[in-house]
Length: 87
Image (cartoon, rainbow, N blue to C red; front, side, top):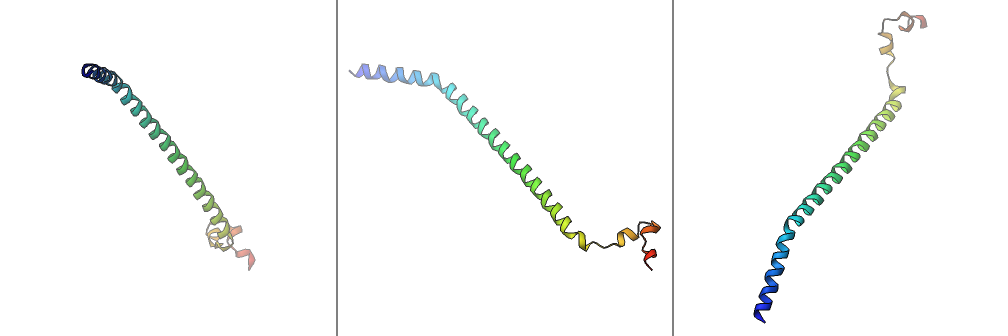
């Protein structure tokens, strides 16, 4: 009986030893896949944040338009825009 149990133990241990490289390869593949998916999600999130920031910047510039000084147009050197025709 003891020899039968010992034979079963060693045969099971030998079978497990055969699957170790396969298990290591599967774990490595799953780790690489998880890294790839997380990196893709991160880059999509960064792209979405960049687009949102650009949209907010455009809205802010639009809101600031009434407050912009017309002196930048007068300094252009164009006689039609120097404001002298208003006097």
